[in-house]
Image (cartoon, rainbow, N blue to C red; front, side, top):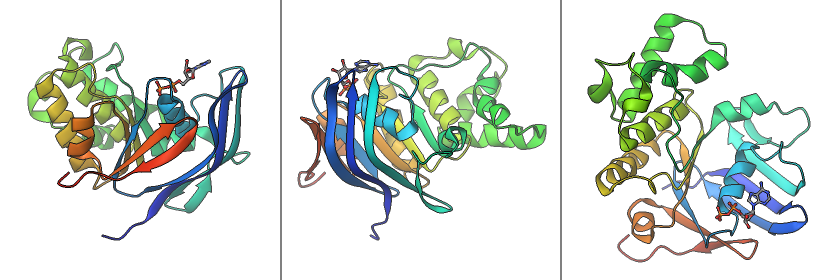
Length: 239
Ligand code: ADP
Protein backbone atom coordinates (compact mmCIF):
# COMPACT_ATOMS: atom_id res chain seq x y z
CA UNK A 1 0.00 0.00 0.00
CA UNK A 2 1.31 3.46 -0.89
CA UNK A 3 2.17 5.49 2.18
CA UNK A 4 1.34 9.15 1.86
CA UNK A 5 1.97 11.50 4.75
CA UNK A 6 -1.10 13.55 5.61
CA UNK A 7 -0.10 15.27 8.85
CA UNK A 8 3.46 16.33 9.73
CA UNK A 9 4.12 17.34 13.31
CA UNK A 10 7.51 18.90 13.91
CA UNK A 11 9.07 19.83 17.27
CA UNK A 12 5.72 20.29 18.90
CA UNK A 13 5.65 21.62 22.45
CA UNK A 14 2.49 22.60 24.28
CA UNK A 15 1.80 23.75 27.81
CA UNK A 16 -1.10 24.90 29.97
CA UNK A 17 -0.05 27.66 32.36
CA UNK A 18 3.56 26.52 32.19
CA UNK A 19 2.75 22.81 32.70
CA UNK A 20 4.27 20.92 29.77
CA UNK A 21 1.93 18.48 27.98
CA UNK A 22 3.99 17.92 24.82
CA UNK A 23 7.72 18.50 24.65
CA UNK A 24 9.55 19.01 21.38
CA UNK A 25 8.12 15.91 19.71
CA UNK A 26 7.61 15.03 16.05
CA UNK A 27 5.45 12.48 14.24
CA UNK A 28 3.93 11.75 10.81
CA UNK A 29 0.39 10.47 10.30
CA UNK A 30 -0.53 8.63 7.09
CA UNK A 31 -3.37 9.41 4.70
CA UNK A 32 -6.44 7.16 4.59
CA UNK A 33 -5.40 5.30 7.69
CA UNK A 34 -6.89 5.02 11.12
CA UNK A 35 -4.30 6.01 13.70
CA UNK A 36 -5.22 5.27 17.29
CA UNK A 37 -3.90 7.76 19.85
CA UNK A 38 -3.38 6.04 23.15
CA UNK A 39 -1.82 6.90 26.50
CA UNK A 40 -2.75 7.25 30.16
CA UNK A 41 -5.39 9.68 31.28
CA UNK A 42 -3.95 13.19 31.37
CA UNK A 43 -1.16 12.44 28.87
CA UNK A 44 -2.48 15.02 26.41
CA UNK A 45 -4.51 12.99 23.89
CA UNK A 46 -7.47 15.39 23.80
CA UNK A 47 -5.12 18.34 23.78
CA UNK A 48 -3.34 16.93 20.75
CA UNK A 49 -6.64 16.64 18.82
CA UNK A 50 -7.44 20.22 19.78
CA UNK A 51 -4.04 21.30 18.43
CA UNK A 52 -4.94 19.77 15.04
CA UNK A 53 -8.15 21.79 14.94
CA UNK A 54 -6.83 24.93 16.71
CA UNK A 55 -9.52 24.48 19.33
CA UNK A 56 -7.32 25.55 22.25
CA UNK A 57 -6.53 29.03 21.01
CA UNK A 58 -9.13 30.85 23.07
CA UNK A 59 -7.93 29.24 26.32
CA UNK A 60 -5.76 31.70 28.24
CA UNK A 61 -2.38 30.47 29.47
CA UNK A 62 -1.65 28.05 26.62
CA UNK A 63 1.68 28.10 24.80
CA UNK A 64 2.50 26.19 21.63
CA UNK A 65 5.77 25.90 19.74
CA UNK A 66 6.57 23.86 16.64
CA UNK A 67 4.93 23.20 13.30
CA UNK A 68 1.78 21.37 12.21
CA UNK A 69 1.44 20.82 8.46
CA UNK A 70 -1.55 19.07 6.90
CA UNK A 71 -1.78 18.05 3.25
CA UNK A 72 -4.93 19.43 1.66
CA UNK A 73 -5.90 19.65 -2.02
CA UNK A 74 -3.56 22.63 -2.40
CA UNK A 75 -0.57 20.83 -0.84
CA UNK A 76 0.92 20.95 2.67
CA UNK A 77 -0.37 23.86 4.70
CA UNK A 78 1.11 25.16 7.91
CA UNK A 79 -2.15 25.42 9.86
CA UNK A 80 -0.61 27.86 12.35
CA UNK A 81 0.69 30.19 9.65
CA UNK A 82 -0.39 33.77 10.26
CA UNK A 83 -3.54 34.51 8.30
CA UNK A 84 -4.34 30.83 7.74
CA UNK A 85 -8.13 31.02 8.16
CA UNK A 86 -9.32 28.85 11.03
CA UNK A 87 -12.75 28.46 9.38
CA UNK A 88 -11.04 26.93 6.36
CA UNK A 89 -9.14 24.56 8.62
CA UNK A 90 -12.22 23.42 10.51
CA UNK A 91 -14.06 22.65 7.29
CA UNK A 92 -11.28 20.26 6.40
CA UNK A 93 -10.55 18.83 9.83
CA UNK A 94 -13.73 17.60 11.52
CA UNK A 95 -13.95 16.62 15.17
CA UNK A 96 -16.27 14.34 17.13
CA UNK A 97 -16.24 14.31 20.92
CA UNK A 98 -16.64 11.60 23.54
CA UNK A 99 -20.27 12.24 24.43
CA UNK A 100 -22.61 12.72 21.48
CA UNK A 101 -23.47 16.43 21.29
CA UNK A 102 -26.30 16.92 18.80
CA UNK A 103 -27.68 20.45 18.67
CA UNK A 104 -31.18 20.92 20.11
CA UNK A 105 -32.75 20.98 16.67
CA UNK A 106 -34.08 18.50 14.14
CA UNK A 107 -32.10 15.59 12.75
CA UNK A 108 -32.03 17.31 9.34
CA UNK A 109 -30.89 20.68 10.69
CA UNK A 110 -28.10 19.08 12.71
CA UNK A 111 -26.48 17.75 9.57
CA UNK A 112 -27.32 20.79 7.42
CA UNK A 113 -25.94 23.23 10.01
CA UNK A 114 -22.25 23.19 8.93
CA UNK A 115 -23.33 23.77 5.32
CA UNK A 116 -25.35 26.78 6.42
CA UNK A 117 -22.37 28.10 8.41
CA UNK A 118 -20.20 27.66 5.34
CA UNK A 119 -22.65 29.83 3.38
CA UNK A 120 -23.97 27.01 1.19
CA UNK A 121 -27.57 28.02 0.67
CA UNK A 122 -28.68 25.84 -2.25
CA UNK A 123 -31.59 23.89 -0.75
CA UNK A 124 -31.50 21.02 -3.24
CA UNK A 125 -27.75 20.55 -2.90
CA UNK A 126 -28.07 20.72 0.91
CA UNK A 127 -30.79 18.09 0.91
CA UNK A 128 -28.69 15.76 -1.16
CA UNK A 129 -25.57 16.30 0.99
CA UNK A 130 -27.56 15.67 4.17
CA UNK A 131 -28.98 12.47 2.70
CA UNK A 132 -25.52 11.30 1.54
CA UNK A 133 -24.01 11.95 4.96
CA UNK A 134 -26.80 10.12 6.77
CA UNK A 135 -26.35 7.20 4.37
CA UNK A 136 -22.59 7.28 4.94
CA UNK A 137 -23.07 6.72 8.67
CA UNK A 138 -25.81 4.13 8.15
CA UNK A 139 -28.55 6.30 9.67
CA UNK A 140 -30.64 7.09 6.62
CA UNK A 141 -32.85 4.00 6.82
CA UNK A 142 -33.45 4.61 10.50
CA UNK A 143 -34.37 8.29 10.27
CA UNK A 144 -35.46 9.19 6.73
CA UNK A 145 -39.12 9.34 7.72
CA UNK A 146 -38.54 11.59 10.76
CA UNK A 147 -35.92 14.07 9.66
CA UNK A 148 -37.88 16.94 11.20
CA UNK A 149 -38.03 15.43 14.68
CA UNK A 150 -35.60 16.41 17.41
CA UNK A 151 -32.15 14.82 17.27
CA UNK A 152 -32.28 14.59 21.06
CA UNK A 153 -34.84 11.79 20.75
CA UNK A 154 -32.36 9.46 19.07
CA UNK A 155 -30.51 6.77 21.04
CA UNK A 156 -26.94 7.48 22.20
CA UNK A 157 -25.45 5.41 19.37
CA UNK A 158 -27.66 7.09 16.79
CA UNK A 159 -26.75 10.51 18.19
CA UNK A 160 -23.05 9.72 17.87
CA UNK A 161 -23.51 8.56 14.26
CA UNK A 162 -25.45 11.79 13.65
CA UNK A 163 -22.51 13.78 15.03
CA UNK A 164 -20.20 11.90 12.66
CA UNK A 165 -22.62 12.67 9.78
CA UNK A 166 -22.49 16.34 10.81
CA UNK A 167 -18.68 16.23 10.84
CA UNK A 168 -18.63 14.48 7.43
CA UNK A 169 -21.11 16.69 5.60
CA UNK A 170 -18.38 19.11 4.50
CA UNK A 171 -16.31 16.14 3.32
CA UNK A 172 -13.34 16.80 5.61
CA UNK A 173 -9.90 15.52 4.73
CA UNK A 174 -9.20 14.59 8.35
CA UNK A 175 -11.60 13.28 10.98
CA UNK A 176 -10.62 13.48 14.67
CA UNK A 177 -12.54 11.43 17.22
CA UNK A 178 -12.03 11.65 20.97
CA UNK A 179 -13.08 8.36 22.59
CA UNK A 180 -16.16 8.25 20.36
CA UNK A 181 -17.58 5.01 21.76
CA UNK A 182 -16.91 5.32 25.46
CA UNK A 183 -20.46 6.43 26.28
CA UNK A 184 -22.06 3.77 24.07
CA UNK A 185 -23.14 0.17 24.57
CA UNK A 186 -21.30 -2.66 22.84
CA UNK A 187 -23.61 -2.83 19.81
CA UNK A 188 -23.56 0.92 19.17
CA UNK A 189 -19.75 0.93 19.59
CA UNK A 190 -19.46 -1.86 17.03
CA UNK A 191 -21.50 0.18 14.54
CA UNK A 192 -19.16 3.16 14.98
CA UNK A 193 -16.09 0.93 14.52
CA UNK A 194 -17.51 -0.49 11.28
CA UNK A 195 -18.30 3.02 10.14
CA UNK A 196 -14.75 4.27 10.77
CA UNK A 197 -13.33 1.37 8.74
CA UNK A 198 -15.51 2.54 5.84
CA UNK A 199 -14.80 6.24 6.27
CA UNK A 200 -11.03 5.84 6.13
CA UNK A 201 -11.36 5.35 2.38
CA UNK A 202 -12.44 8.99 2.19
CA UNK A 203 -10.47 10.64 4.94
CA UNK A 204 -7.63 10.29 7.39
CA UNK A 205 -8.79 9.31 10.85
CA UNK A 206 -7.16 9.91 14.24
CA UNK A 207 -9.07 8.32 17.07
CA UNK A 208 -8.33 8.56 20.77
CA UNK A 209 -9.22 5.25 22.36
CA UNK A 210 -8.46 3.57 25.64
CA UNK A 211 -9.93 0.23 24.57
CA UNK A 212 -7.04 -1.94 23.43
CA UNK A 213 -9.38 -4.45 21.80
CA UNK A 214 -10.94 -1.63 19.79
CA UNK A 215 -7.50 -0.35 18.79
CA UNK A 216 -6.58 -3.84 17.56
CA UNK A 217 -9.79 -4.13 15.57
CA UNK A 218 -9.65 -0.82 13.73
CA UNK A 219 -6.23 0.82 13.86
CA UNK A 220 -3.65 0.75 11.07
CA UNK A 221 -1.17 2.54 13.31
CA UNK A 222 -0.89 3.30 17.00
CA UNK A 223 0.79 6.34 18.51
CA UNK A 224 1.16 6.66 22.25
CA UNK A 225 1.58 9.92 24.11
CA UNK A 226 4.11 9.18 26.79
CA UNK A 227 5.70 11.80 29.01
CA UNK A 228 5.25 14.53 26.44
CA UNK A 229 6.49 12.52 23.44
CA UNK A 230 4.86 10.68 20.55
CA UNK A 231 5.88 7.01 20.58
CA UNK A 232 5.00 4.68 17.69
CA UNK A 233 3.68 1.23 18.61
CA UNK A 234 3.87 -1.89 16.53
CA UNK A 235 0.48 -3.52 16.09
CA UNK A 236 0.48 -7.06 17.39
CA UNK A 237 0.30 -9.88 14.84
CA UNK A 238 -3.09 -10.76 13.47
CA UNK A 239 -4.57 -7.38 14.19
P1 ADP B 1 -5.99 13.08 28.00
O1 ADP B 1 -6.91 13.35 26.84
O2 ADP B 1 -4.81 12.24 27.61
O3 ADP B 1 -6.68 12.53 29.21
P2 ADP B 1 -5.86 15.98 28.21
O4 ADP B 1 -5.32 16.47 26.91
O5 ADP B 1 -7.31 16.11 28.43
O6 ADP B 1 -5.35 14.48 28.44
O7 ADP B 1 -5.13 16.75 29.38
C1 ADP B 1 -3.72 16.75 29.55
C2 ADP B 1 -3.39 17.53 30.82
O8 ADP B 1 -3.70 18.91 30.62
C3 ADP B 1 -4.19 17.10 32.04
O9 ADP B 1 -3.34 17.18 33.17
C4 ADP B 1 -5.30 18.12 32.14
O10 ADP B 1 -5.71 18.31 33.46
C5 ADP B 1 -4.64 19.38 31.59
N1 ADP B 1 -5.60 20.26 30.91
C6 ADP B 1 -6.47 19.91 29.94
N2 ADP B 1 -7.18 20.98 29.53
C7 ADP B 1 -6.74 22.05 30.26
C8 ADP B 1 -7.07 23.44 30.29
N3 ADP B 1 -8.00 23.96 29.48
N4 ADP B 1 -6.41 24.22 31.17
C9 ADP B 1 -5.46 23.72 31.99
N5 ADP B 1 -5.09 22.42 32.00
C10 ADP B 1 -5.72 21.58 31.15
